Length: 92
Image (cartoon, rainbow, N blue to C red):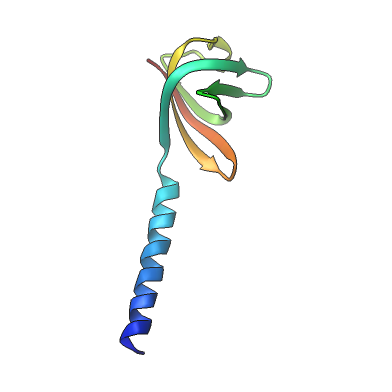
């Protein structure tokens, strides 16, 4: 194998590792609640709609149905394609 081929393989492996590691970490956003739809399990923050799931945890909040417009929260989430899946919601 040539040095050039080995370098390409190393770069491809590193790029793959970075892509996988990047998707494993939750992102965080803080702000005031724009809207809540308890029936759809969604909360809108800073113009983005976030989807709560059965594994979403709540810290300092009883649940999604207790949130109201204007509440200050922090959302931890993962992106799944075009969806924003909430891992945790905390009161600020």
